[in-house]
Amino acid sequence: MKYKKMILAGLFLSCMLFTTACNGQKQIEDLYWTDPPTSADTLYQNPIFEPDLADPSFIRSTDENGEKWFYAYGTENTWAEGVHRITPIVRSKDLIKWEYIGDAFTPQSRPKWHDGGIWAPQISFNANDGMYYLYYSNSKWGDDNPGIGVARSKFPYGPFEDLGKVLDAKSSGVGNSIDQFYIQTGEGRNRKSYLFWGSFRGLYGQEINSTDMKTLIGEKFKIGGNMFEGAYIYPHGGKFWLFASSGNCCEGANSKYRLSVACADNIKGPYKTKEGKNIIDDWVEGTPFLTGDASKGWVGPGHNAEIIKDDKGRYFILYHAISVTNPLLHGGATRRPLMIDQINWQEDGWPEIEGGTPSNTQKSAPYFSNK
Image (cartoon, rainbow, N blue to C red; front, side, top):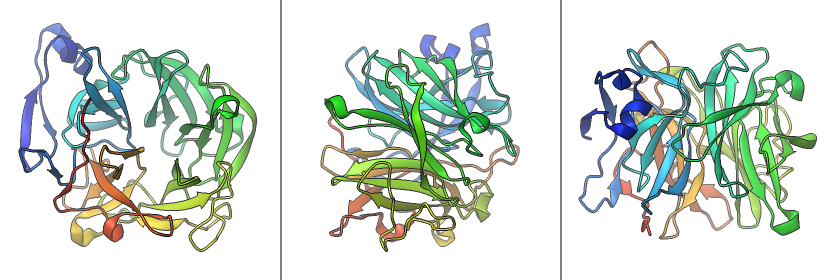
């Protein structure tokens, strides 16, 4: 692994990255990512971005020059002494080599409808108005009324304008209302949009207006019990696959955070394990999908980003995990670098990651033609 020291300056970067840079000062910061070990960029080795990109989400977009970029977003955190990121944004052309380009919010533009941290962002493009919508959780530890909001931008790199609250614990009747996931399903008249959310108080969903991306429709419904947070639903093979995290995300090297999966024929459920257990029941976890292995150097994998199919027909999933040897950020918060691994769909239809643990050796990288 090579470590690079970058001077972040320039018309586009300096004013987005550092408020002090706009005042004529330059700041130097250590940012890390893994360089592919071959010039052909055909291999990678975890992690793919450091020091932190917790609870990631990403999207692919074409810029004004016709170049295709992946943009990924992470939870608010302090990366180093004096370096605080409010929804950091990084970009890549291949999902492997990433560069930090700015934050979705500044201290002045950050959402102010609740006094919490901006956690677990999820990006979505709305074809109706050609805008990028960033859903986020607004919460602090032990919060009695956390909520979910949404912001909007013309560009995936921002700046994002906050549109305010979508729901909170009191208005929705769901304790710990965080970790949202937006999805559209169906075609034509049957096309609907849903927002799912919840953290260890049950997983819930509700239809949401796809025009304003904010107004909830109808009644909420429950899909999972008290073992989950960070829900993500992926349609595949005519079924809906629910990936969700269990355990404590933020206990450093002692974290037992993990990912499991359940399957349903309908987006509203019921979601069942491979053995047929309904995960709507409390204390029932999904079928194990990804767990940590301290002997391989990584624990606490979870809160995955979107799944993507590359141009060779292979499926990859992004997520965060915790290094056993470097588990904490400056100030003591758990350090959660960005990871990637390939998903294999088995003959029985269920998804699997080789070994069921984060990879720690060189692997075949995803391929995208960028055309």
